Length: 312
Figure 1 (cartoon, rainbow, N blue to C red):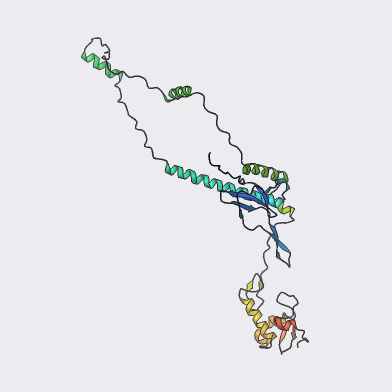
Figure 2: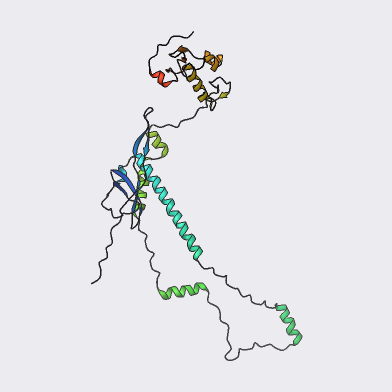
């Protein structure tokens, strides 16, 4: 009695399945594991103030290759972004297959033995007819008779061409066997199905951005202005690099009463702001360098209510 050989049914590479409440594509299958690449992700909020969000997919997961109980997903039920993600994963898989095929062909060329070119024998050239007739006239006018080969001597026979030999060999062996027909895998079928759905829905990057209400942003050049600290340098923003920390540090010292505003800033900077007195003998501006109303640069002091009076 022979031993029973267990051959488990594995997941098929390229299948689109549902796992843990999300849609995944089977990217790799072997006897040890099956790799699932995420097709759908989760929406994550980038900035609570602006409300900007982005799609987070996470990394691939490995599961047992015999998890054939996973439910296959119909590609027609996927949304535009999932179709785009699936097409990108399919392109990556095709590039990986081409790379592997190129490596295999390179190894085969390296292992192939080097065959020396065949040696071609060159026959000696025959004499011209005029030279032959002159030689016969010099010997005499006797009739020349071709000599017959002696008994047992080898005679030269015409060589059969390769095409005739090939034809006889093929006729002797019988008709050629039919070529095997290649069967399509699930990855090939899903690829064709994905292309049909994408063409039907018109899924392109521009169409997807238009459906999501996104428009291309054109950056406008920033106007040139003088540095806010009063140094006189021209910049495209508010400060020359490094001058913002210096400006805020001086404002903080003036606000805490450690230094007078006339000692810290030029008359041009002092005239650009409205100053008020604060507790402790200091002064602060009612607006920041952007022109926005604020309570000062001292965070601890700004959190408390101070009786501000107009500065002289």
